[in-house]
Length: 588
Ligand code: ADP
Image (cartoon, rainbow, N blue to C red; front, side):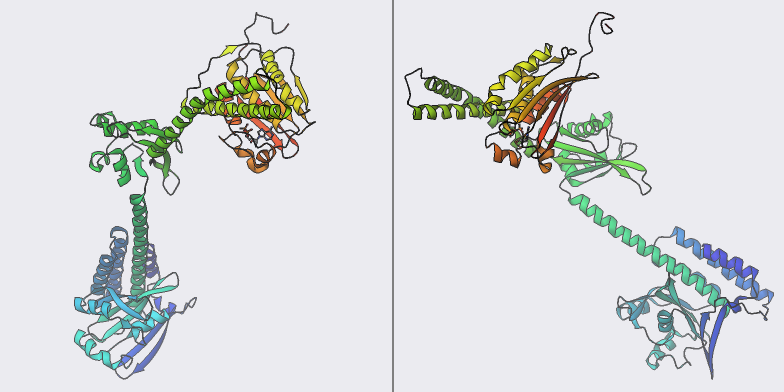
């Protein structure tokens, strides 16, 4: 288009000077002329010949038709239709009999017709079945040299292989001009124009044909890009359609633009009921399944958010729904995608596991308490004296049972936390006294390891409201770890600190530390560091998981810093309550 406009402007300006741009080599023989045209870049010779008014007007008309054909490139999408229309328009306006466009065979050794004007269908089909070998004739030379080749009379020109003569005669043409189709310096095909009578191609015709070749090359290139895109689209669709997750696409006005089969199956909705319709209350009122679809969309608020949804209706399905933005090439948001992942089975298994843990630990608690009670009586020699070996054995059994009771309690706590049954009762209290009691209760453990064990706290603390039994469990777990994972004669310090609207319980130790690779897992359920397992074979890996959950329920945080073989510092931060005191008391 732009090229054509430029060519017309150029033609009008220098209507007398086209020849200067072309170099011509002519082989004249008796009865015919073979001509090879090459662009002589930068060579602007002086123009001697003038064209007649009539000729000028004729050429103008041809160029106008070219402008029309260039428009085809923007409105028409079928490349064959574009090429056929170009061929017809140009061939008729140049007074030619036929015109054809050629493509290479994949090995580039042959050429076949992709579109034509004035050529019988059977010839076109024949060329596809049995491509023309790229040889030394005009088309072959144009497609292999990238230059224009012409002959005034094919039938007399010896360049034509003798075997082709009957076919040429049958088609009844004499003048021939062939040009390459070029795209970014690459020859992608060829174009030939055929004249009924012997014909010497003019420079003007070469110009016109060069523009036509450019238009055709653009059309072919566009078609290739389009078919690549189409193939890409089909590939994407195939993936989307075979996904094991449901996929729903919404445009910005909340209409569904794509539902893959899995989404239909999970939500039990029909494509026809929802496609391109706004998913609103009116639609939702039609069935419980459409209600599910509506509620899922309503539930999702933010991009990249994942939420759980349980469908209503005879079949309960638990879905993990993730929302992702859909963006156009320029990054502008054009809609959202909801990915529906079926987690019904996982949920069932999780529930079974949780039930098992709860039931098992509940059932274990009573017998363990009984064993512990009996062993305690025995080791205290309440039922008669024991010899030292018996005493040692009962003592060890008692310790092991105590450990088992602790483990069962941790398991019960963890499953209660998960089921949301870990009831909390908050109350304000003497926080220093509360922490001191925990520290004191653990003193025997610290002493058994000969640790330098200390507690330090400010004289007064701002009020905090807490659940004493739960928070005690959390703090106890952290201090207990510090004691457990510190070698004999090490140091464990517990400190209370106050900072703006926060209270910190800091537990420092000089123990085994936490290896870098374990750091991100230590609050996970059942996780135990490798060095910790080596150092202390016993442990459930539940202590910090429980502690974190409790602290977070107090709106606090639990963090740590640690270096392997140097020690760790755990910090529990709790928000302090607004202090209710008589006016002026704060300044006092
Ligand atoms: P447990 O102590 O029963 O293994 P926890 O949940 O209390 O389970 O702790 C998880 C893991 O965190 C421990 O196994 C250990 O690897 C690491 N850890 C916790 N506290 C400390 C500490 N003070 N020093 C070194 N490692 C620790």
